[in-house]
Image 1 (spheres, rainbow, N blue to C red):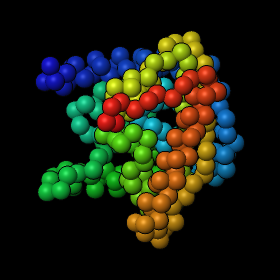
Image 2 (cartoon, one colour):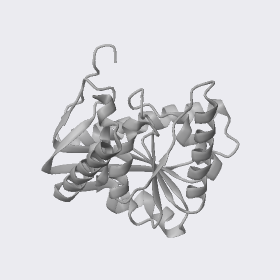
Image 3 (cartoon, rainbow, N blue to C red):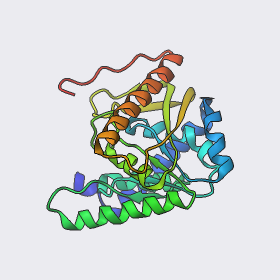
Length: 242
């Protein structure tokens, strides 16, 4: 089955289906945004930016689209795995072309070179004034824990980072999956909470980056819980051993 799903034409079909779903949820959901004013200085200056949201909110992520469409240049980070292919295709259909990047395992020199090239591409994109959208706990988790990569890009570029908490009702959260993915029904209500700007100093060492990523993780998790609470949703308990 995995081999079948990874065929090029199957991935293309899945990408179009997911893109259609993402667009349907964006267009039929009544979105309420909180904290949008924090982005205005960035838009006025024309500088690049980095936007973060949780992997489990990919099905509702186009709730942010109209805000980020204000940027003429937009990219997103997506895993280069075959499982990430249809997600990249769907986001491309939605106006967010992908940069395929993930952390390489030790000893895999080919993937390490690809990761370095993707990192440089991401840095150049942000430095040129574009916005880079990242799910910083993907593609493997831990859930709602920011990995260092996003902060390394922020440190290298000096770009502001914005955290986003998203929730939609009616929706179903799949607690058996590592990211507790939220799948929404059309014609619902959504909340999008924006927080920032945050920065990583250019001279930040590993200890400071680790401290910042833990702080940002807690902040974005809190924004997600707040968005859920405003819609009357209850937090999903982690799966056994999760």
